[in-house]
Picture (tube, rainbow, N blue to C red):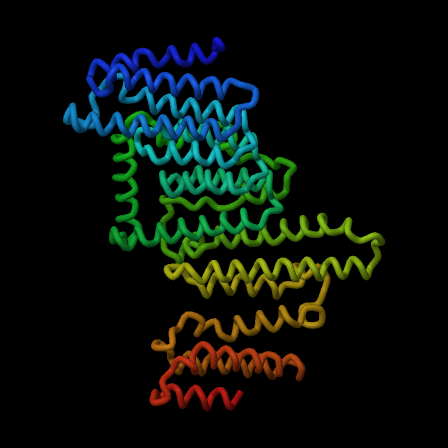
Length: 456
């Protein structure tokens, strides 16, 4: 037996004695447990060990712990007896996970099992411990965006620590600014946060700024009174690792990072309403959208430029066209994301995307109508149907429908014949598929809608 295996097994002696003293296990049972642990330790310390050996060891220890808990409840009439055996097995499981992660740092599935184990223990696992595991994982895999997203979601969804979540996203983008999924999740987080803030105000009846100020003061006092070990405080989360800290200071030389640092702070202390405070309308998310489009466009050009053997004006134009098409596809994904946030002014959010594409600066010197007729038509259709976009067939308002038709004719008068025909075709299909096909023929709105479609 190796000295390392012997050392680890010797650590089990106090636990084994405690289990026997409390009559939870017999001497024969603990002998069998120690024999099994000895076999596992030999495997883990051998040169040919695999990640599967660690997984089986963890499974075995989990089963032993479950059996111990059942016998505690049955024999001792309690789930806890406040002795070494109550926590030693769990501590050993965590140690096995840590050893496995150290030996196989590239096995992300095992890291995931480790984090899930810690999270499922609830308050029994410290906030700081999970932080340290995430920090270690991020250092080893800084380019794995799923790790960053998982860390950010843990901060916000489990601990409601939106400041740390925002820092995680912004640091993730420093390493992976070319990843659309990361930008998408960051914008989604900001929209979720604003939605939560607005709903919180509605539920608590914070109808004016004075009431909101008083509520914030009460909340701050409760935080100060309830800070048990300080594990959930913002200070500690910033001290845990440098990856979680981000200072707002002078220019760093990284333009993307500087733009992120310039974003307005959106937090629970924001006053005003969506009419007086732009951040409550989702302007932080829209600012990130602008930065994302600019950054992703640059990375796309940089990545694909090497694919062209010869670089001339024609190939440059083709690459720019591909880049614009790529960015517009991402924009449609953001519009679909905005559709899901019923509590926000979705028309305002979507209109920002439309306005983005109407600016010549975002077309890389190309013409929207001449070079991107498909994009131009798509933006027109979104604008035309904006006021009826969220109307269900049973809520269809004829006045809103007529306003949409007026927008259509306003655009049609300015379009070339071939573009006007394409817009007419797609607009007609949209009205038929989304509304006319879902209305009953006896409904008066069916007749009115049919007549409107004929006029198109």
